[in-house]
Length: 106
Image (cartoon, rainbow, N blue to C red; front, side, top):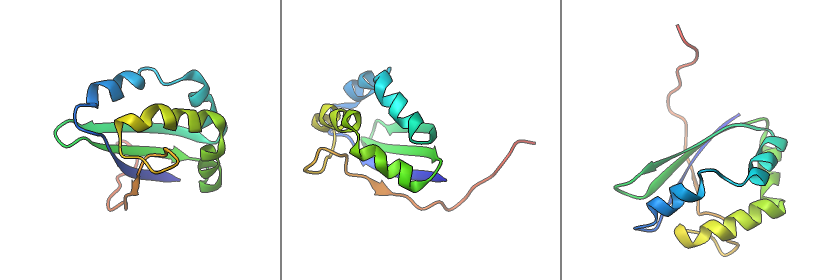
């Protein structure tokens, strides 16, 4: 299953956001893998502060369960000062609709 969503950085937080992801916490990466995430990329538009995330996951239930883990909640708290966040510190995220896909290589 492929997921894509948009998030928003606060102005001036781009470099710190990048720094905090290089690398992400090993325990966070482990939780992602344990919950069936096998591809995950985040792209930054420095001009707007928009973040575009793309993930390939085993299934939606396992993806959603990540939010209940302690490490995920600590990560949210760590990142919330840099970006639009909900009251529980989770990032404000807008799911994106896939409109085109090209599979495979020639």
